[in-house]
Amino acid sequence: MAYNVAEQIERMKAKNPAEPEFIQAVSEVLESVAPVLAQRPDYEEAAILERITEPERIISFRVPWADDAGRIHVNRGYRVEFSSTLGPYKGGLRFHPAVTQGMLKFLGFEQIFKNALTGQGIGGGKGGADFNPKGRSDAEVMRFCQSFMTELFRHIGPNTDVPAGDMGVGGREIGYLFGAYKRLANRFDAGVLTGKPLSFGGSLARTQATGYGVVYFAQRILEERGEALDGKRVLVSGSGNVALYAVEKAEQLGATVVSVSDSSGAVYDPAGIDFELIRHIKEDLRGRVSDYAEQRSSAEYYDGARPWGFGGEVALPCATQNELEAADARALLNGGVQVLAEGANMPTTIEATEMLQGAGVVFAPGKAANAGGVATSALEMSQNAARSRWAFEEVDAKLHGIMEDIYERCVAAADTYGHPGNLVVGANCAAFTEVADAMIAQGLV
Image 1 (spheres, helix red, strand yellow):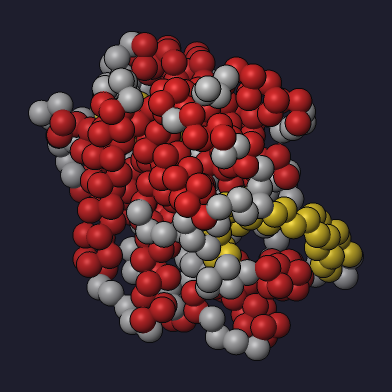
Image 2 (cartoon, helix red, strand yellow; image 1 turned 180 degrees about the horizontal axis):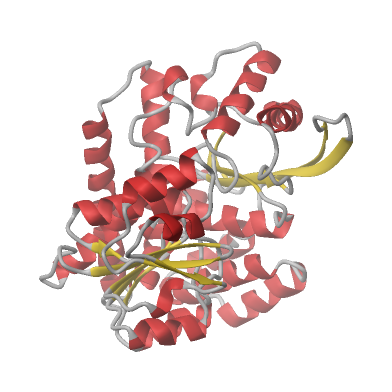
């Protein structure tokens, strides 16, 4: 007897009624792996779905801190340790006012399968806090990070749980978190956090890895079609770390990237986004994409707009979850999109995904296409364990190879389970079977 997927999804909805992002992620995976479940009755006997959709552990804690005026604030911190089946929990920390336990469960669940696809021996987890670092001084961010680590340090370690950065958590925050961990634990465990500055164990190419990786994945899709990125118009959403380095790599490969965006609006630059200018504005000045348009004569800024109507063959959503909806999918189709590779985690709604796939667009899900960041974090862990540092070119080459391997695994699994060319089904089936088989081998734990 095999699982009834519809019944399992309803069970999850009843059990997690106030967590829509988590339900969306679980539903997408369970529906995709139905062909696997039909062939593997032993998965039901081992209660794989019941176990794989329940985090092994969730830590929730208060984070008190004082601002520069001495006013006391209290935020809520989390770490969702979802699955250690393939290795230590691995996943980023997100500091953003919209962070909830349900959002982190969604991200942690996705991380299980993303990490499995990398082949790097890492489990899945996610964490963060409903703290907004924007507009805060370095001293305020430092105090918050130190308070956050006061609780988190008990639960992490190089062979237990290895957090990294995510939205709102960059090199500055990782540095403060690592300093607090080192003092509290009385150990210099370089491998306890990834995304570190180079001065104390960070990896070259880690900053660029997610953005580069999604472009490598899109490039591989085009190569399979007998095409190349060279000469293509590319639409990028977002202007954070992932988006910036997707712009850089796409342009290095000959594409013309015509858009970036942020929460206030979108920029259209038919001459091609000037990478150094947008990087300077976002990383050095912490400015807005509207500042780019003011300094670039070929660019126009559209207040409140999304970039999907500007027209292009390749779309790379690199901002946040559910940013690309059905209306945006129609705009992409009208603009001639051929390939969409997700640079963010679940940025495309289920309805928009189905529209794009139904129209023949090659759709690469985030758990495959944006796995370059966590893959390079695992490479950072390897360097830390060996107390060595690899050259940028060596890390980049390894990243490129990992993304090629993920693509091949997705294609092979899609073929095996009767959905040739469907990278969503392929990614989910390839990752799910690897985790499920390891769970069975390890017994009921």
